[in-house]
Length: 481
Image 1 (tube, rainbow, N blue to C red):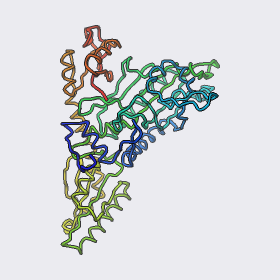
Image 2 (cartoon, helix red, strand yellow):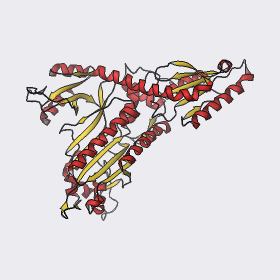
Image 3 (cartoon, rainbow, N blue to C red):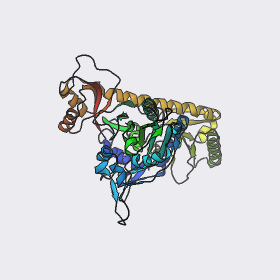
Image 4 (cartoon, rainbow, N blue to C red):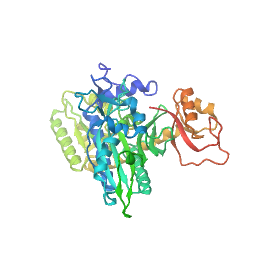
């Protein structure tokens, strides 16, 4: 891979190999010497920062504040919530005890317990509620051995919100508000069609009353769980003795929610939009929106300085208009090399400017998503670029939705459903809601799982696609990452 500049396999013929090459060759991330871990390079981290910036603005409007809690969790904290630790037990990384006087600690697989210990000290009255806190941090889950960059590693970055409410109704409302904000991250920012729904009881977050999820379906037919929002009920409050004095002057246990998404979103972005040339970035999340490539000509050296000066002026004007623009004026690479490099890195719009363009006072604008070229007057390029970027964003979402819609089908026969899912599709089907039935489907098909329920209600007489028992709901089945 290191000796090959371009992508050596097609996305269609070998998506896993294609994905790995795109991530490394576009310089988003790399493999680490530490087993199970990854290195996020500047371009990949800039994408994560843009997601952070977008979401932090949304959180601020909701009144959620950012904080930071220790990454080390005392073993006794896990023991307080048995259902929670049972769900994470195989993944917990423990720190070797340095002293017999110190309690054994784990590196956080998630932060409910360490945060709720503090909440029990901070919350005293209904006036302290709601408590709305989020943190951006790293997480360690030790079961992973083979890294799939951004998709699965022992350590990854995420945000996790943990909120406390006086009533169940407030908590329910917040859970839905957050999952809707997650949908907007997926669709409005990343241009990925995003399904929202309840997880089955079997797939519910350990210790939660119920879990909502956003699911994104990749071109290879696999589902990517990209974010979740949970109503934790009052179980953690009781375990950590979080109480408040209500308006009735009596002591009450509050209701709690938790919610999070991770750098896995970047994996979905790559798989959904990338092509055989490399990465393709939606303009709203791209750290650089426009690349200007000046084209100089040895036959007309007297014009080269004018070309470079004009390109620099365009860069300054675009940046002054808050359109992140980079001028690639390296003189040791050909324009063709630069075109390929920036296509590999997925930058949304390329502007080409050469001596012939100066003669007509125009430049060439090239869209990364479609390769479409258009001639634009230099005097109008600053006004035209935002229009083109908005077009690219919409075109990318529309193309992704068309792909997703083509993979979706409603199943009424179990064997047909299994066959279609094996052919890179995902299915909506009736299910009884029984965890044993769900597990049987997963085990006998080699990994077909439930993803999320839909708003489509079951009708009288609808039965489970597997066992034939009365249907509890309609849910999406697919293979998953």
